Length: 288
Image (cartoon, rainbow, N blue to C red; front, top):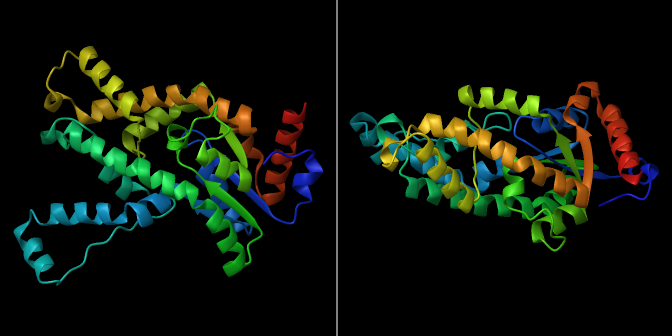
């Protein structure tokens, strides 16, 4: 959805925007702000962790609880229930389920199990993205929302081809919304790497990239046994590696199908009107 003029966007009676970019650049913050301003907020990560992976997550909780005899007996007798309390701002249940590969004594998962959960996430993300048009119409039909923002995960770029106009997910998103890249800087990336170490986000790797980075990390650290890999060490190193790997592909997606708003410019946004001004500037920049 590319516009022929700023007025075409500004004067439209309904707006649908899909924001993408690195995790932590401000997608959820912006979406929360616009939700308070009367926009419908569709969180792709929340949809993944509740509708499409919720059962996996809760079953994993139960598996851990069954290791405690006291809790196991209560679960068997249906005396207690276990649920995931995921919110738009707290994705810890999904992050915990995806986990990190490596030494099981340090909380790591066997690589094959980690890859299995990664594949579950890939499928779930494709479903959640493809459902966006339904939620645009549902937001209007049920709740009378005219404006809609889709808050995508950082891994959007891992499940689409940013150079292919026939990519089914890109085609769906671009037909029903305008794609907007919230572009961070290298300084933002470095800050996010530091934050990831204390507050991990859900991580998804393309299968071939995971294998490549896994072998690279083992070689760098002189480790031959998968179970000897430090999961926290690989998690932080892998996050930084994949973050910088994604940046040119985010840019290609914006160049080919959407618009760019600088992450630092979000500081100017206090309400929906401020966001409209940023969109107008982004449209003008692309037209130039």
